Amino acid sequence: MKSNALTSSILIDNFRHSIKGRVKTFEVDRQNIVHNVIYMYWLEDARVEYVRSLGIEIKPSTFIDSYIFVVAKTEVNYLASALFDQTYTVYTRIPSIGITSFTFEQVIQLEQDATTLLVASSVLVQLDPKSKEPTPISKQFRDMVASYETQSTVIGV
Image 1 (cartoon, rainbow, N blue to C red):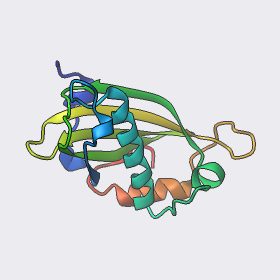
Image 2: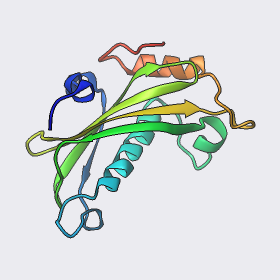
Image 3: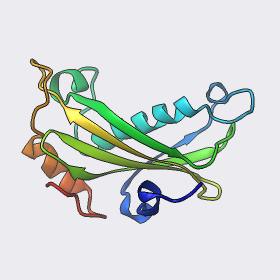
């Protein structure tokens, strides 16, 4: 697959956060490769763990009452396939924060040979708990991200 703006600027050294996983039987199709929708679950899991690593307590109500982040856009470039029982790492970072939204960059690589499976970029919007309308990202959240992202500069903090 050809390199583009989304894949060419990604350096794993810029990612402080990562989680590891192993491909499960129910995540593969009849060809023994991971179904493309499964990667979206892995990306979401990594985003939640990233927020936890900022020091935010994750409870059933966290993303309902306190931090209402909704995915507004996700762009995924699939580069290779994972197979049953392979281990992988999901790298996650926030490179920029706007007024009411922020961007996650994510990369999934195989553990055994660092093959990049995909590169993704997601824009999340923070909503007001009552009105459900976009609301400015708090200074507290900006500061937590800036403090956590020591490997790279975060635009907008």
